[in-house]
Image (cartoon, rainbow, N blue to C red; front, side, top):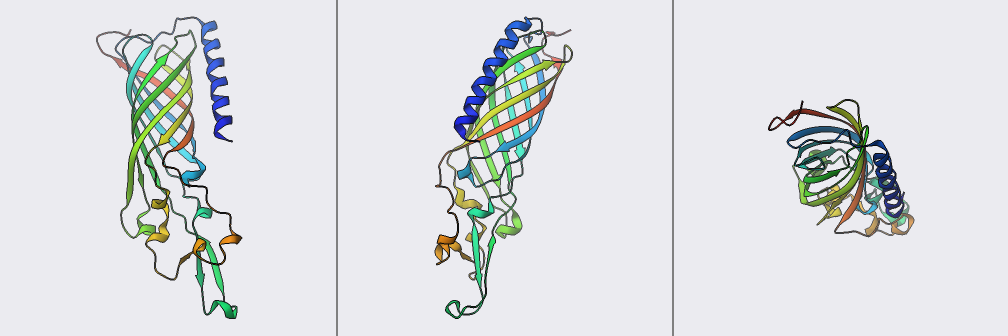
Length: 247
């Protein structure tokens, strides 16, 4: 799915959610001082230029209600994708190449822990059962690289921002389920940090530096900002209120 298709689907989803909430009424309004905790699970589809495969993701939001439609709080997500091996092809040759000796090709891939944290603002339209919302935030991300593949601890940090929309279906006054779609962008992104060939021994050669380069599809052009999409389903609960706002 291309980014253009994702954004088209996103806009359609937001429009349908708004219509549904307008039809549902306003009984399920958020209260001032209400704290809502949402646990999300789903998957993240990374930008091709990020050189990370799609992977499961877990998320946690803790939102404080400023009034009956506006809330603010931290949003965390954690995933463990695999780096895209076809972007990092290595070559091992034995003997003299022009004499027809053996050459092996393999994908130099590694698992990566991706942690993202942001301060988000959420605008929610109240409804009896269905409450659509939009959210946006800014924060930071960290890529924790595999220790074995990199011969030691390595990580990469950068600024991130997100924007998205979702739909809350109320199960009770305090509990509900959510469907959530977010665009998550990483700035100052450097795909080269995912290349374990940077630190391996000399006989493992990059295929792009050999006469075999034309036999392999090149990696996408690098980007300094990559845009990823997170699709998740979750459970939300209101554990308590500040200032006696709840029943």
